[in-house]
Amino acid sequence: MCRACLQHSRTLGIAATPTSRSALHKAYRAAAKLWHPDRFENNQHKRLDAEERFKRINAAYLALCEHFENPTKMPREAEFVTPVRREAPPTISFGSAADCFAAPDFPARVREAIAAVRLEHSDPPVGFIDLSPGSVRCSQFILLTRHRMLIRDASAILSVIWYADLGEIELINLQARKKPGAWQRIAETIAGRTQRYTLEINRLNGIQFSALTDRPDDRVKKVVYNFLRQMKSNSQS
Image 1 (cartoon, one colour):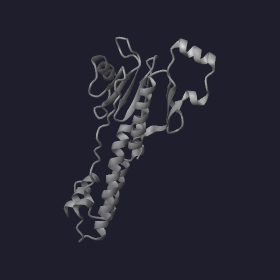
Image 2 (tube, helix red, strand yellow):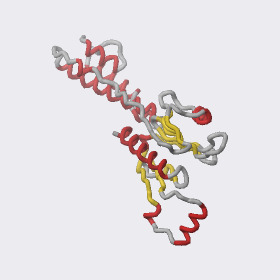
Image 3 (spheres, helix red, strand yellow):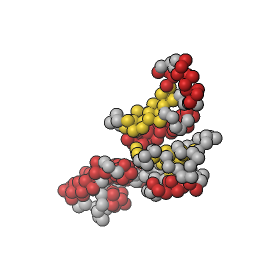
Image 4 (cartoon, rainbow, N blue to C red):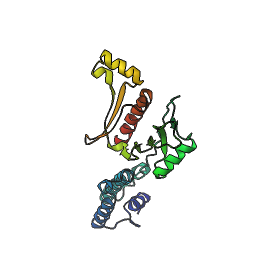
């Protein structure tokens, strides 16, 4: 019984090194069943933890199998210590854009809106965009956290998408699709419309999550677009 075997045994959820191959297989099956990521399909945060544990369980099982075949070979430290990936918390910057806030500089009304969402401690807020400027409370907003994006609309409906569930993200130039006519340009000028981009966010299954056109403004859409692409890449790599 070596230090490596003890470490691997703990990973498989047993107190001592298995004394037979059948005991090893039984411990592996139990641990793999307990931490299989598919069990947490509806809870993305727990799924991420399960995926990491499942990787360590498989690594421990393979190492123990090898040690059973070569009991005199002492594995190196690096062969049984699986480092836990600790990613730096994501950051976002809105520059001087109005009604946009980055952690940890949230005003009281924004902190109140975030508190009402009841985020888990492991999923802290990163950025907040108030879509109801001028009101006492943030009734409509976009909240970006470490693991997901939340949007509260005018009907007080809170929509959520996990970064790992992000599909196609497009920043669409509306003018490039169809050049507006003279009367349309006049109407937009009178209405004060200045937005030229739509940010379309889709899920992995192709269903649209949200399309941001009128709010927030174009420069903020570009910031959110770049942030979501980065988080999608990080979470799905």
